[in-house]
Image 1: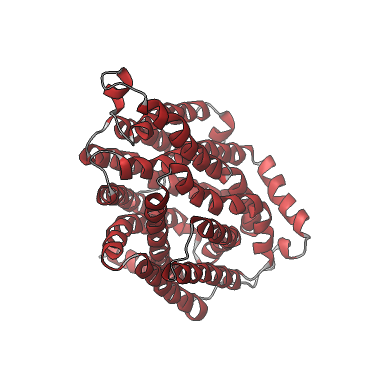
Image 2 (image 1 turned 135 degrees about the horizontal axis):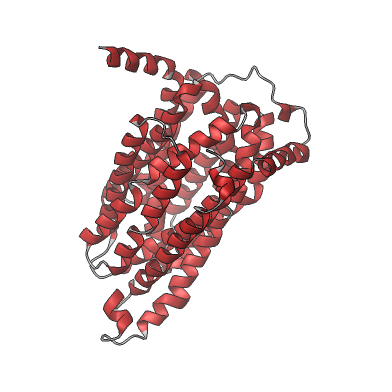
Length: 432
């Protein structure tokens, strides 16, 4: 009875956040389905890992370049209005893509341009939404936010390949885009008319110039050496992870025994793993050492999935790899999110988060480009020259997709090395 009472109290106190979370997550499902469909569309059109990876490069490049100033702008602007404008612009790019697609005029370079606009909007929207969450949520629930965030993300990861593959097969890419627009309307109306985000506190950022405000975010991180080093740890992990993301569709769609359905299956299992991990993270008590949890979760992820993807020849092995690689990530993310929210003052969060985004995510477009280039220009050609009885052929197989498998083997060691190196960083452990 006591637990039920506590649960009802928590729901009441988190009501505004939960409404925002549910509708934004639903909109996220539509966006994820569109992105998933476009990856398949671009790879089937071009047959190139690099050309497909450039979709994410074009999205992340403006995000990284302009993020350092976005927090300063987000601190100055009304958070709710910022989110509505950014989401509306992103929806407009989907409309443009849909019109081009139905006129049979959609080309890969159109997607690059549209993704750049989306990335620019996300640059401003992301720090605004982070601050909005902090303002509508009582401090005692910060631990649960990370878990709920990954709960939605993982549920979307399960549903995206299932729904997107079904809709693509039955009605095509246009229907996926229409569903994306439908989810946007639901989220927009809810945010515009049902959500109130407090704006009564005037942040220091509202009184400062753009450069001075961004400079304060940089100065704060230079003083907080633990957070600064933790950001670079995540930047190195993101480099490895984005190489993985670039190689993943190339292997799944072209490997013997692979294909669209298998890629959807493995992505569904990855979503199930993050779903299970997010449920655990949501209900676990705060650990004694958040830093230890972050380090161990990342080491476990890096030392399992990549090896199984490299050596596996069947969907079942790839599914096991996906599950092991992602089950611990929500727990890592929850504790990382809690450290940031608890250590960074609310009136500085917009500026600090934006600088963090530039530093932590600048390796993602680099990794996507590097991953696509390595698959197309290095690893696939190397494997194409192998005899059936060679050591590499016995390890990673033959045919298209074997080069991507070889690359997974290499990045497994890179990921383990990054984790072991940063585990020895004293500044990070000072966050304890």
